[in-house]
Length: 301
Image (tube, rainbow, N blue to C red; front, side, top):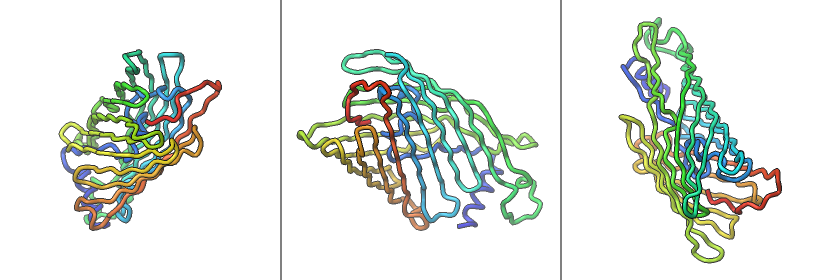
């Protein structure tokens, strides 16, 4: 596995361009603020979310992702938020810090929100500490450290039981050069489109299908198909399929009307299953009500 990782890193360092993909999230429907700034303020209270993901367990240098999102309404039509993403794969560390702003309009039975985000990405590749085949290779003589600004935008329509979202969280394509002005890596724009609906099966059971499509310029299309069942507004169980990549099982529980915990287990079906058959994801969401107002409960997304 160390040899495989070394080959990946060498490829990253010497090819003309390399597209760094944004992290995957199986429980994306409860992590929307990370992808779409228009989601900020939509939960009607101060919302805090934490998500941790360990992808491809057993693979040396496998992706590890930790996210934090905080957002709240400000007035009747605006929302603000903050999001942080720490993503690590092998010697590559990337940290994103963004502030979000949204403005919503009443439209039919729901609201149509527009959002923008702005912030910075801190990017580090620990090349100098790697063991290399050719001693003194200049491509591995020093770590790569960069910080660059970025902006994003999105649109989000939602009712009590339906949502549709489209966003580009990183609109500025960034290039990383070495001292010879050769491109070492590039950060491509990513596009996210997702939608979901809540069907009432009976007075106890609800069915929640959802779809997410993700792509980058010149990169492959990633599609997630999810189906969750919500019982008595407390227990949630579901399954998801990422086309050509993995099957997932999801569990959720409303500890209180304000606290939701969730877990997702991914079973890999692509070729990497031979060395890394599974991934794990844990989520914790809080809704903080400072004004004792009556909100719609529970929140289905």
